[in-house]
Image (cartoon, rainbow, N blue to C red):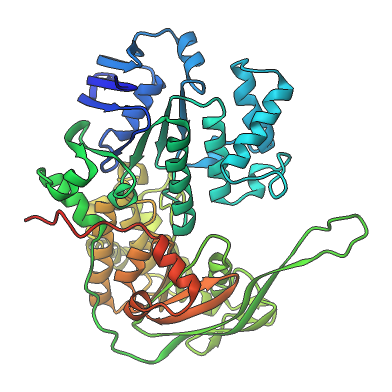
Length: 531
């Protein structure tokens, strides 16, 4: 008998069809992956199981947990099931956790809400599950707050909350999207071991086939609210029948062709850079300590070259990026762009800073939602001594929108009218519009679907050919860095532990840490590539 049985589930919200006769099942001890692009209905299927649908929702079909229909259960009954029989791990742990409560209190609260045991026993259970997910008390006391933990550690707390009462079904909605490759591998291994240990069923929601290719027992592919293909993982990957499944597979391992760099002239020169952060005092009269985030980093980026920077969270990538942009002063070393120092004394050199632009990870969060696209992408004009105006301004806007694959008519729209991939194109247009010498891409494609990511990478390759771009591409996704850079640097503990031509580093890594990163990165088997 299946643990979870979904049969012909249809969902509409205010009359708009969201799910169309979705059918799938999860058995005890089984991992079922639901994959597809944003808008395919993956998360809405998970929310339907939890009965956390928005107002105006209408559902038809059958949704059974151990033979009991969930669609017609009253809210009080569902409150008793959520957390006890069905646990859920959300994509963004920082928003799933209460920032003013300790991690111990949040796990204990999950237990006490269901009145499963007295507070003393609940505290013991909380410590037990936190230890089980890799947060032992001697290193991670329950008195810590979420902001004191890394992204991977916060995700472990969310998993601890979800499994505190040993639910029969665990739903994980994109639990590794924003994590670096080693942390991602650890979280996936943790989920697999929990399934084996507790015999629970796991419904894994993801947009990346590579993440679940060697993890899931079955894969369900969704598109536009419907299941287009499903089957045992090995069989499905070897015998893909639907064109959409094959497209997802190809997009997961998408490769681009970059033009060869044509100018070996140094543009960005970083020499022996050191950046320290002051740590709080451990005791009242103790001297404050220092944390060295960037330690004697040196490298050169030539004009027209594309350089990658990879490493785990906390390795110093973001601190180094801020120093290059002149946002953080360094304690030692020198950073120069085209021979000019980024810092002049203790102040940033604004004449140099205006020659650099950034494309951020979250394009929606980096735009003012009240302004139209024309104003958003021309924000860098204020850096110019004589910004274009009138017809010249409109021509520059139209040129940039066309360059990133959008229409000049999009200039009059608001940012909420675009998809995630389109927003990232607009972010790239904003970075390009003043023709900077250097662009920094900070995790610019990590939150995108594999198919959208492939299109953005193709766009970057086209822009490199058209505008001879020079960029520093910072990412935890090794497959992306491998295809979109000429050289790559590997950062660990504030140091560059290895650097060289991208393909050479990936094919023949010399440093143990580089080999660890490459081994941890999820890869698709070289099968299923049918025409």
